[in-house]
Every structure is written in structure tokens, then in C-alpha cells.
Length: 492
Image (cartoon, rainbow, N blue to C red):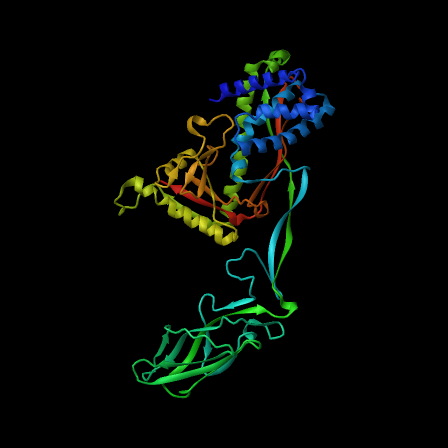
């Protein structure tokens, strides 16, 4: 479908290079060796790409060039001039490039550090960002539910957290938010219509009406912010009708330097090894003998169009299968099911039923946020038949390039759902498996890394009766955070 566009680009590139005094076939080694000529050649090939994609293509083309030059020890192959055009077709079409974090490698084996921020509070350390913990205070008391202080008593709030006044103290945000009392029939009641704050010296006192009994209990006390203790008493202590407890919220902050709250950084070191991905083409001895066929524009366009698609689909298939397989094993709590058949009691039709898939998507997306503490999912990868479900929803909008198969070099973006998820479409995704993943902007937060080493090259011909042209892509792929991916399993 894109053959004519490929041929047109190759023709225009050849014309552009002739203006520089070189031929893309006869002078190809010179183009590779000369920085200015190579940059001009890549600029010509990148025509039609979006600005961000163009910059990415130019960067990756430098890696391709390094691979070709490294192989000249075997003798320069005339077929080498096909590599960058095939790469021009392959790279933009990769779903993996659009969905995953791309970190090029400069060696076949590297140890890649991923920066992790951690908070250190006393002897405790936890990763950031954290949904449950404050960095600005050592501990919050009464986060999920107010803490109960028995009346009367002297309660050491620091000791309850394993601290003492040499390391920490209470902040002056102490509040009494409810009281618990007993009445004459022996039942216990909690009154939440209370808000008491101590004065500057930490003193507090207030009256509590004990239901309809007519009794009033007077509660008073003191908060020692330095020592971290709360002293509380009441006037009806020992009576049947009396206040038995107060519920409080407060926070503890670092006091001495040894307990100061700190943010520090450490590195998660991941070893990455490049793997080989080969695609071979065979042809007859007669075709091999006709060397001019390599340089015929029609043949070039056919090879570029065919191999570009095949290589992109093969790489995508391998990485997408890894996403599905490892998510099923390591992150099962982020897997939801959606049936295309409406429930028996659903009366609004199939189209309206399809809108319900957004509920499952939100659940998976929010589960990813909870488990990663980084962000909600922002990318969906699905088979075109499953993308059709998303297209019928009220929240889908087309902002992609896949109409009519997509323009030559366009990204595989099918649209946007709910202004939240970028939708990618690929036939290599198994029907019924919709991948929901987080692609963070910060590479240190990467969920799955795709690391090209030699994005594309042609290996030397193997010896034998049937010559073969072997396209080789070398890259590493690594799951960094399994909790950053979920699945929607679509059933009939």
C-alpha cells in the first residue's frame, strides 16, 4: 500500500544526493565516510517524518551507520545501500518504539543504572514518590483513622512510634477530632462533632454532654510537644457516665540532626545484553548474477517496502509477547475482563455497553498508579479488531495516522481515548489481549526498555548454492517494573 511512497522517497533522495555531487549507489561508501554527506543523506530520507520522529530517526541512523562501517572489514557490500532505506520504513512503524522507553546502547552488553529517589527518616528508608508517607514529617498520626488516647492517661506518642525526644518531637498541628463516652445503660458512643486545638502552651479543656442523660464531663489536659506526651483527665473519672477516650491527629517531625528527614538517591543497576534478530531472503542464482537488480529503483522499493514491514512486525511480536507473558505472571492484580456481550439486564444496546470498557481501563490504570507510585497508565496497545471496540465508545477521538494504512513513516497511533490513553494498533497483538501500560517521560522511571544497539544491518552472505540477504537487528529488551503494565482480557 505504501510502495509508491517508498519509491518516490528513494527517487527524491537520489536526486538530492546528485546535487551534492554523489550517487547513492556508486558513491555510497563516500556518503558513509563523510559526516556532511551522511547528514544530508539522512535529512533526505527523513522527509515526511514528524519533527520528533525525524530527530529520533537521525539519532538512530547514526547507530546504523556505525554498524555498516564496522562491517567493512569483510569488504563493502553493494547491498549495504538498502539498509538505511529499509530502516526508514521499519523504525517509524514499530509499535515498541511508540509504547516503550527507548534507550540506545553503545555496546552489546551494558549495565544501565536507573536513578531512584528515596526518603530517609531516621533508620527507615522508602522509595519516592510514596502515596502513604510524608517526607516533610517523620510520621503522621491518625492518617487512615484518628488515634485513640485513653481518658484519663499520660500517653507517649513518640514511644508508640519507636522514638524519643532526643530524635523527634510533636508538631503543633495536634487536634482532638472526636470523643468516646459511656452512658447509663452501659453503651459506648463516639461523638465526632468535636474539634479542639491546644493553646500556645499546649493546654486544652472542653465540656462533653453525655447523650441525653443530663451529665456533662469536663475534659482537660496538656500536650508536651518536646517530650511527645499527652496528659488528659476528666471530672467524672470512675463514674458510669463518663468520657473514656479522645481521638487525635498529629504529626512528628525530625528534631535533632541525626533524625533529620532527607531525600537521597540510589541506582538500580540492570544488566542489558543485545540479542540478534535476523530475517533472511533467498533468491535464484540468476537473480544473484544480475547485480544491476540491486540498483534498480523498482526492485529497491519492493525490498524496502517488504522488509521494512516484516522486520517491524517481527520485533513488535517478540516484545509484545513478552509484555503479555510477564504481566500475566508478575502483575495479575492488574488484569481485568471485559465481555463484548452485554449483561442480560443491560437495556441500552451493544454500543452503549462498549462504553463500559472504560471502567475496566480506569481500574487497571489506577492499579498501575498505586503499584508504581509513578503515574496512571497512558498507553493502550491492541489488535485492530479490539481497537474497533474503543472506536465505538463516546470517549474516543481520532488523532492518529492509520487511515488507509497510514502515511509512509507515520507512527502506529490509532487515536486517543478519554484524553488519557494513546491507542496503538498492531495486528501482532493477539485478539482479546489489550495491553494497558505506563510510558513515563522520565527514563529513570522506565517500565519496559527497548534498547537498540545496531538497529539494522545486513550480514555477510553465507556460503552456499542459494545466496541470502540477511537483515540483522541487534537490541536489548528488559522489563524494569512489571507493576507498570496491565491487561484487559476481552471475551465474547
